[in-house]
Length: 414
Image (tube, rainbow, N blue to C red; front, top):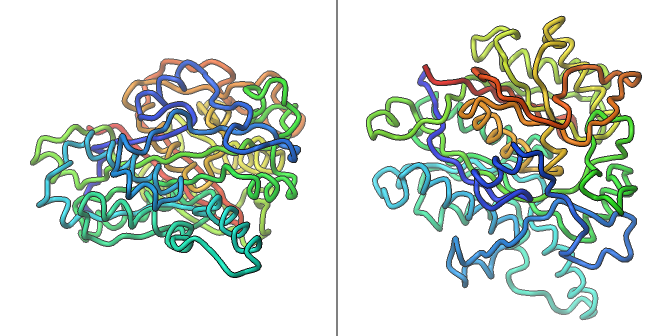
């Protein structure tokens, strides 16, 4: 099978509006979490979130087009533009004509659903904004990328909840290996910054709410004081390219996509299987796909949501797959800084794996002040401060509602 490499990076996140800005903030252990500004948080128990800041759609797209997009679609187009610019493919009509888009989206334009439903009921079910459906449906993010940049290969949306971004990259990887495309823009995008999402996730007892006075301390993966995840938003796009195609045009190569694995728990609508057996299966599949042994992995970017059941289950997965090496594996949850980007989580965390390889740096898990060892969280989660360390192989895992498990592996290009 053909080799696949990463040749472009684009990112909009709670830590910054570019891949470098986001990564540099992460290396410093900064939090992107603060009190909610996007809407009135007064009625809600949850008062904080990881919002995108200072984002101007006009910097990335035509203003009239932006007005017809939900926030998640705007972020997707912006990240795609940055990735294409970074890859030196912007304006290369010959390549882009045949390029494809694989975008992970867990929910779509939820703020559009909220706002237009209000208009619908306030008008006694007589009126609705004309662009309601085109804005809220989850495939329109990928569709807008295709239209904005003249991409006429397949345009697909992957919806596997919090594993969506990982699965989008994994499926794009398979398509290039199989010879169907030479270039695919792959990643994820999500924005659920609205009261409807706030209450919807909180009634599931999924969200952190007790850190109102210190919101930057609220996302606490693997810590005894964790009380749920923090809602985030943003988008990340990677340009995936066939290795020989990239070499022939003199492209900058960040890393190689080495392997992909997926599985299903078949266990519960919202909780992972606590023994981690099916998540471990996805890890094993990915390692086999990459022709790697567990001890070849330098860094594991954890799903690490800061919910008790997820943190324990993921730790169990790692112990099943890595055995005694699990104790020596460098692990971190970057959601401690970005919050949980839902459908975009796997994409931004893939970016962190690529940058970890490029820079030789393990990002920290901030707010890990008292690891929940008694609760089973007893591995090395890189507490509070990142470390400089050569990274040859980085693995990212994401696990979504409905039992979706996705694993992607990157390695240094030899």
